[in-house]
Amino acid sequence: MSEQILNKILEKLESLGTRMASMESRMESMESRMESMESRMESMESRMESMESRMESLESRMGSMESRMESLESRMGSMESRMESLESRMGSVETRLESVEADVTEIKSQTAEIPFIKQAVLETQQGVKHLIEDQKSIHEILGEHEVSIRTLRRRPV
Figure 1: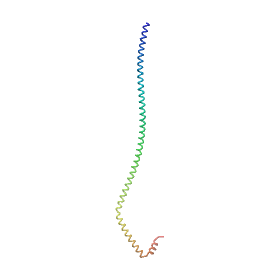
Figure 2 (figure 1 turned 90 degrees about the vertical axis):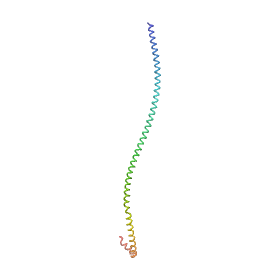
Figure 3 (figure 1 turned 60 degrees about the vertical axis):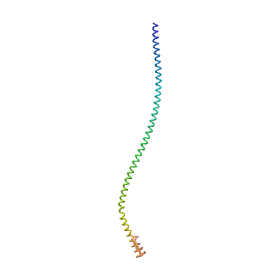
Figure 4 (figure 1 turned 180 degrees about the vertical axis):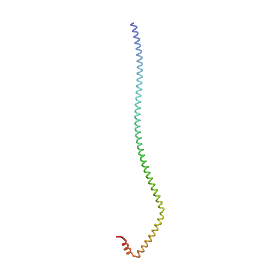
């Protein structure tokens, strides 16, 4: 019986040895796979870091673009304000232009009467020339001394 037990123990040991060899083989295979996975994981981590770096770069560029956009919006607001000011001033100029046009129209209507006024001035001028000639004659008749005395009498003191 002892031989039988020893045979069974040997069989069990051989079976265990085989199983152990199989497990070692599987363990080596798993270690190999683990190393492959670690390598792949390192590659993925490297790619992830690269993606994070690119993402940070994109975020930085996006921030720069947002800043520029805000600057453009500010400038656009300023331009709109200036445009409104110009439109207001243009309205004022148009109002003043209408007033000037009305004045020009009135002046044109008044200048239509100028020939009549000119005629009246010429007639008045001829009348004044006659009066001056008459005054010279009176001055000669009365004498310069008499005219001066009469002029002084008319002036209030």
